[in-house]
Image (cartoon, rainbow, N blue to C red; front, side, top):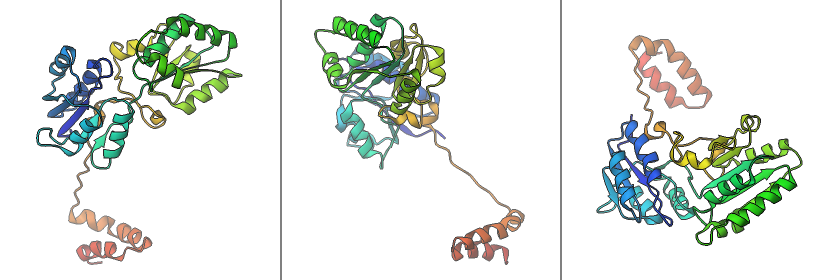
Length: 298
């Protein structure tokens, strides 16, 4: 059964992200959700167009923790939703965590993470991929794990060369970026699986087959992680902060709930009655057992 009303959060940062709206509202509509609410602090023309194309019902120009609270509990103008989905910064993630006992959430979807595991490749491409994630947010995490000191040095040089003059990338790399050199690829892959990052870029198929904890895996130099943001096809609202240990990305199943409907006939209850009463009494729940026996006469 689809949820009745879903709230989609669209982060702004320097620019709003219409792609995140498409990746939340479209699977909600596909699952049959009848009402989709959107919150974005600074929607531009692209966000409004995405909202129309995705079939959103209402869009509110609010953001941050207060937007999460408004959707979770409702206000005079913002209706209360059954579930809040979508990425955001650490404040949005913290707010989702705080309201999760009162309103459903998808998972922690931000700040963004990229983890590249490879011993070879184009240093220029790898540096560009790391900076592409770092430009999202000062709290974004962009890390390379490799087995070659020489390769690590070349990538570090490319990062310095390509570093943009403005924006959050420099701060992100300084605070949360890094290059880790492991003794072996076994150690590198084990470290990647422990990290359970949102995006894991594997240098080749052999590495990719051994990555078991990741929001999404991108295989080989041509599978640019940024292509997954917009065009490859899988949903790009992905778990962060280690949540990839127990789930993958957002999908239509996140917008439905399973309700068990059970029926027994008189004959059916008699046939299982002794099983139920035996188990109930083994747990010390005499009233449970009597609930069956008042019907069966046993």
